[in-house]
Structure formats: structure tokens, C-alpha cells
Image (cartoon, rainbow, N blue to C red; front, side, top):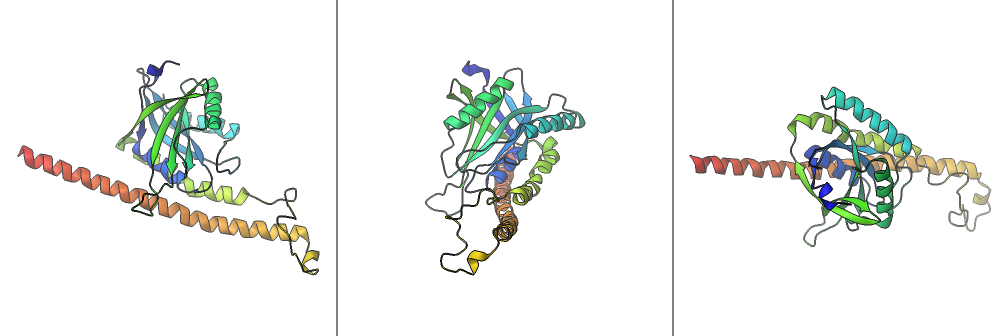
Length: 270
């Protein structure tokens, strides 16, 4: 692969906020979504939308999205691109999180990326490393953002720039607002213990009670699933509000700094 093929990956600021908010909703498992944008003639990416997607399963070291979701999202982006007067808008990559670990892609990430590149050689991967904590603060910080492609199971990396794009803000926030609904969807369908997966040694009804041992297994499973869903929904409420608050606080502070810098420059010119 010619490293000069892609010089830079430019990410719309609202798309960046969507990726970070989505990543902060899951501290113990990876999340994933797709990236919509354009590829310029000089091989630079411009990511305009980040589209969060439901996971096929939850795991701390890998994540997968279904082929059906990929196809449906491609069709949706094509339709939205025409509405936005952006006929070249298409799916150009995917993103996922690395909670508590480094930003660099694993061999599984590179395998997944290689598969996507068979479909589209311009496909890019984006990884956000989250839930790293500094020595002076207990607040999780976004440590790094990595853009990469695969070249014979070796990573090829590109610089990432975050851009303000006020013309695309509304469409970006529409994707950001899908995250709570997506998490509730996962909570409603996520059944960690099913009829075929109950390990009675790991989840004994009772070690010493003959009465509890006679409780119907199906009833226990149904009650467990109902409780799990309720706790998951409560978790969704908490884990979405906190990261969104942190991100918007940082955004406001950044905008204030920009305003102060502009004021200073105006004073100097006068």
C-alpha cells in the first residue's frame, strides 16, 4: 500500500462528539458504528457523520456489526446525502472504542479492516481510546484517536484533524440523539442468560435449600432477564447523561477560549 494514498482524516466536530459519547456509554465492552463522508481527489477523508450501530454481541476486546446494518446504513446515507445536497456522501469507514486500553488496533481489528477494504479500498478505521484517567483527576479523559488501514496485517496510520462544520451541525446532532434509543434497544434484546446458556454450577438456585431448588428454572430465568433489562435501562440513563455533559462542558470551554483569542486579536489590530 502506498502511504501517500491518504494524507489526512478530517472529522466533523459533531461526528467526533457522537463517537466519544457513544464510546463513553460502555466502560467494559467495545462499541462500534459507521463513518459517512467524502474522499477528496487528493486522497483526504472528510468524515461528516458518525452513525452509532447496535452490536452483535458485547465483549471487552472485540466488536462486530451485522452485514444487514451495514447495507441498511449505506442506503440511508445515500438518501440523506441527496437531501443534504451532498450526492458524494457515502460510508467511508467504521469506528470503535478501546476502553481502558491503548488506541492501537489489535490483530482482530486489522483482520476486520482488511475485510472492509476488500469491499472498498478507501475504507478507513477509527479507534477512540477512552476511560483512561490522569494522576490528577478521576474524570475519564479521551486519551487518543487513531485512524488506520490494513496493509498485509500491518497498520498504516494517518493524522486526524477535528473540524468545525456549522453547515452540517443539525444532521450530526440527529445521529448523536440516536444513542439513547440504540442503548435501550440493546437493553431490550440483550439476554445474558437464556434457556440454552444457563450454567447451573455457576448460577446455582441455592446451595443448601431443598425448597429453593424446586423453583421452576424457566421462572428464574424470566425474572433474571426482567431484572437485567430494568438495570440496563437505568444504566442507559446514567451512562449517556454523564459523557454528554463532560463533552459539552469541554466544548463550551473550547469555544470560550476561541472567543477570548478572537477578542485579543481584535484589540491588537485596533
